[in-house]
Length: 421
Image (cartoon, rainbow, N blue to C red; front, side, top):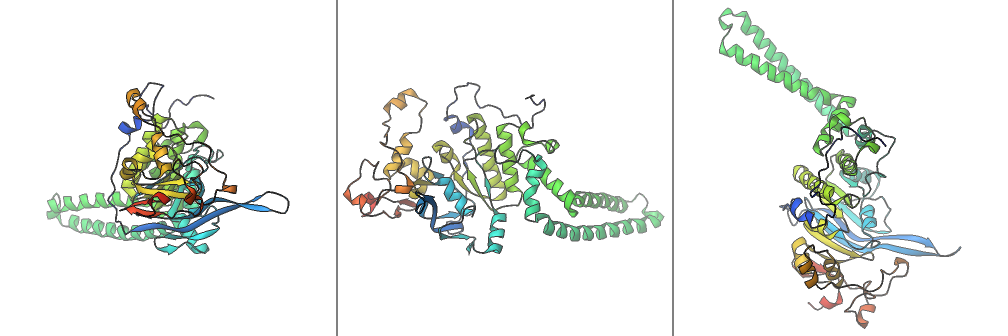
């Protein structure tokens, strides 16, 4: 394939050394603190379950419990990271929240209102969008970048109300322009006003009013509004508007992910589910995309559910982190609290697996290696789902499923070791 002579964005490497390590994220990702209201929740998930019927024989099906009785809340303007091993149900949880899967049971509240019925679901999908993991397979190769980004605008009729409002505003501004023009004409009729400061001020006001109308004119018609909105979104995510007519195969991985982000922003959402958006990218590009997410959150007040398996990525971008195992949330806490004081044995093992670039520190660290594989959701163990791999498991762990309890302020753990605390 012929290489593009003028790429849209230069995805500059953080370090030209080919043996890059994840510790580069420590220096290149902007750590942002969000001032959020602890009692202002944009999304509430209550006892959510997502079971898939799996046929084990001709006449028998067994439920695969991908998400099993999960409850949590997300505050407006924050980023909640969701981590866990592959197959634990992270992506399924996020897609079930967005109603891409019909949940088996449970309740989802968005801005305090339950997401039930076609009307509520349509409005919810306009305000809650998704950025997929693979930036190539999630984009239609037969559509141009302009068509991809503008599709949500057309589907949700975003242009309709905006164009109607802009037309009213345009008429009011046009009336004001006519008034200024008449005032200038009246002043010119009096020869004493020729060259006066009052006439010069009015002419300057007239030019400023004309600029307002010229800037507003593209947003008064559907086609011009969609085109202007697409160009605006491309510039927001760091792309060049001159290449809106290109197809996705001519872009790099980082550029494709930026297209996916622009598409997610098209309907002016309040909540975005990020499904491992940087896992398919090089480490040098991951930092750029993460910083883009941070900048957009600050600019538009977005709320993220950030799904990832890279613990360093989640640490940098998240305000709080939820740890998931076999369809259950086993620990939930602030980002710093979780890394400084992990309580659940599974969380401790996960954090011990973070690679340490310093060989001396890496040798001193005691990594806790879990034995065995994740049990099948088709045949989950009784009681605690982690007991078959837990070094501290006892007979009590097999008797009942531990509840997610608040051990300290904002720190929740589902483990029998903390039932009495």
